[in-house]
Image (tube, rainbow, N blue to C red; front, top):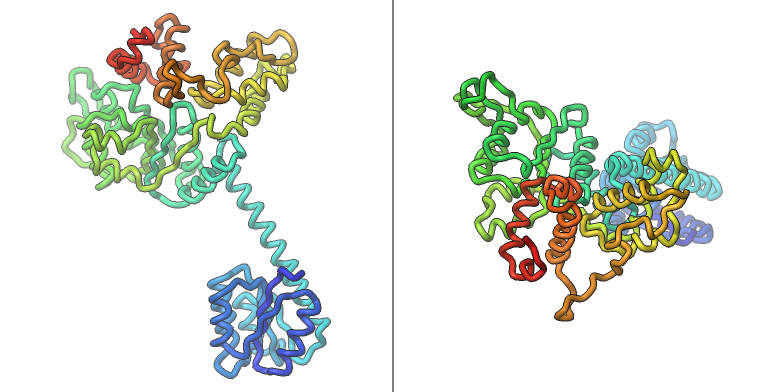
Length: 458
């Protein structure tokens, strides 16, 4: 029990010596103080799990110190010593959070028993707190699967920011699960019973996106035959998730900035300000900082969005989560349940080696494909795509001997998917989990890249 630290505060020197020796013999690590001043200095310099405190001290009331202890260190259990357990001091001590009251004089066996009960109470409270924390974590993830350190840290941050009303910017590559995390923040917030509205900023052209976000009045444009409420109005009281925020055009950036700053906007063709109470969560797979430097994104809007950042690690950076995800996708598949399919150890090793440039979305698609191809009760390596089977843990070196960059890996993967889809961009975009507009932009970038031309991009 030597690890249990105890502070004994009592003005009687003989009692301090005797009780300190007995408690040390019982296994406690004991510090003593004759009054409030020394006790406060000791409490300020280290943490005590237990405090034994006389209510009557030469330099003040022990009740005042009890109140300070429970305020600064609620987990510290305090046993109060008093001449009479029915006194006004004893009643005050219990109201202030004392674990127990012991009246002087007493036998040391009684004090040790009271301390053991206080420790038992503390252990139960710690266990209850840990259970509540695990429940909070489970609720916060809402389907975001993983037990790696990076994921657990992310889940802790989700639980913390969910309790606030702060604007959140979620960062991460395509396919990592940004919408899942946004939904988790919403479900853990006080807005959980209100709408959670999702907008893919990359999938709509500017005029349509503007109408979707802010609505329009009748006659605002040719096809506006009646008034339409925008998604900001639909999400009033709840959360609006703006996915791929980096795809906004400058005019829309200005309008979004105004809503974030004032809480008001106007419908297209409208003249009246509409006030809403909406929490905005944005997400991006692009570097907004670089876009700001290159004048591709408003700096003031970036800082409005980046009040609290959540970064979702790529799947290759948390390979220990691959078996969990594979197991989840297999267990939740109707086809797997019907056939009783499992994953062989060999196939699992292959999937853990692969770097997953398409992240969790790519893994899910691979499992769905393997379940279709698997005629037996076990997914084997031959049921996995060629690129997954032949990829090693580290990307293969290029002709010049260096390792490919993340951008080069993404380009290779996108071009490969487009080729497998025989140039059907809609199908390829669906597999990649990005909008057709984003895919078109990337392919145009690859056409202008010397490396892409060398690889036969078109």
